[in-house]
View 1 (cartoon, rainbow, N blue to C red):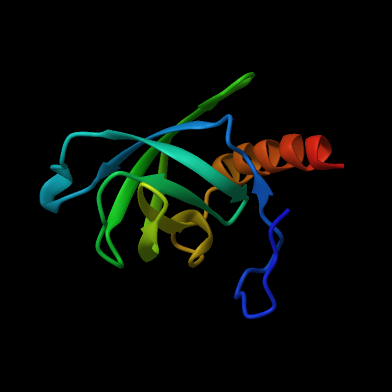
View 2 (view 1 turned 90 degrees about the vertical axis):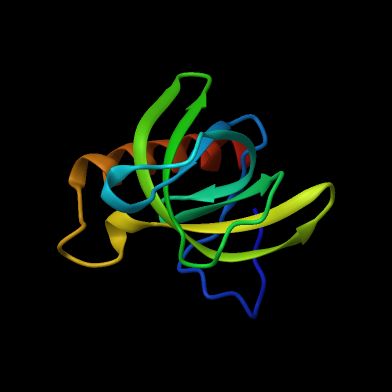
Length: 125
């Protein structure tokens, strides 16, 4: 679990290095850039941090495909909160957009991300 006292997170995030994520930036009119593979650093149902080979602009809209053992969740929308140099690339903090406001809320996405969070919560305990 990672927790920092200056953190704005609602819940703790759990280490999830075994999750693979394909990240695609969304452009205008649903056109996007080619997807890139990123490494997941930590995760909770509201957001995640990834190690990305290139920087991403703050506020960029993303489409994620999350995959791991017993886990496959395609088409998860997120936005970039912060991006900073980290190890061999950039640490990109993401917030899932389903929880930003009532218009974006999706019970199906919430349930799927809650299951993933619960899985790693049990692994951490």
